Image 1 (cartoon, rainbow, N blue to C red):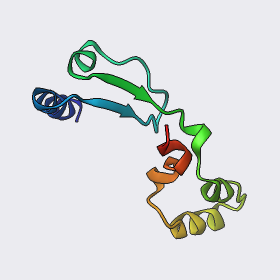
Image 2 (cartoon, rainbow, N blue to C red; image 1 turned 120 degrees about the vertical axis):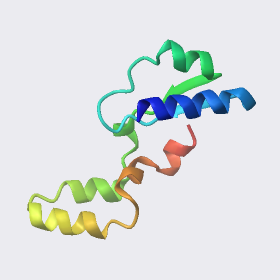
Image 3 (cartoon, rainbow, N blue to C red; image 1 turned 45 degrees about the vertical axis):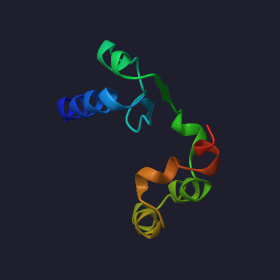
Length: 91
């Protein structure tokens, strides 16, 4: 997967100025590699904890695991977009 992403980044950088925004959904964003720095104009990251959708925050507080699972299934957006609030997009 990382190799494929690297090839895509390299191809994009040949024709465009690439601004890379990292959404660290597992762990922190960490430092970008020399390869990434060579092929991007700018690399940024978003601290996701600060931008959790309030609706999903309420779902996460449901203590009963079965009820929480049902509420997560009913969540109207894909789960990975739970951090894509209007405030986060403005950054």
